[in-house]
Image (cartoon, rainbow over all chains, first blue to last red; front, side):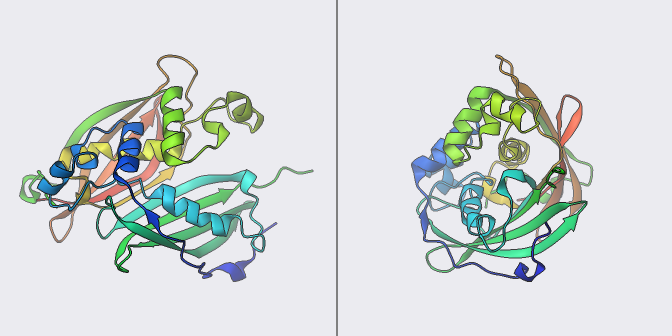
Length: 150
Length: 142
């Protein structure tokens, strides 16, 4: 069943702060096999002009996607998560995420479309640090595949 | 930001050094833990087949993380990435063997922008097919 268009533009409350830790960044960089010293060595990061180790570009998705759970699991929206696949992902950075950041995410439903029985949901996550500075925006397109005919 | 590549040194068509990335089941388990994405389609082939997939598939975000390394290794400073976006066009199937799957990533400068920024278009291939579409990054050069 097509999703309710009246949810377009709905913004959900900001998430509680997520504190970015050096060791979490290291764990993520190791998991993607990326040896860039800016992710693990504070001195190497400082030599590049960063105040502490920075996170790989896609690291913040773990935070924004968890925040998007408010949308995905909103019972009023009624998305069938068991049929959802990740369609597109985009990030626009004001600055890199770095260790010590306390990040909140504000999720907004940007668009709802129905195409060949599939529900397509665009969620924007605005990420801010503790001082209110905008750090990064993440756009996530989710596609809920059409249910098979009963 | 301290990109080691000078804006003046590139032109439209400049190719970045290509890289190939191996993806094994063990890497997917490690990525699941680090990212918090424990969807069983990325580690349980019985579950993957039940939902209509040929086998376990890589996290799209894992492939996205690998592909941008062609850009971050080129510029040196990952903080130079201003924008990065992809479309997940085809899943990377990861067999349960020692070799897993191979993702081959190439990239070239597609446009020169203001403020010493360039747009880089990426191509990520697995088994001869594109796994990422519309894969683009904007990077600020030195």
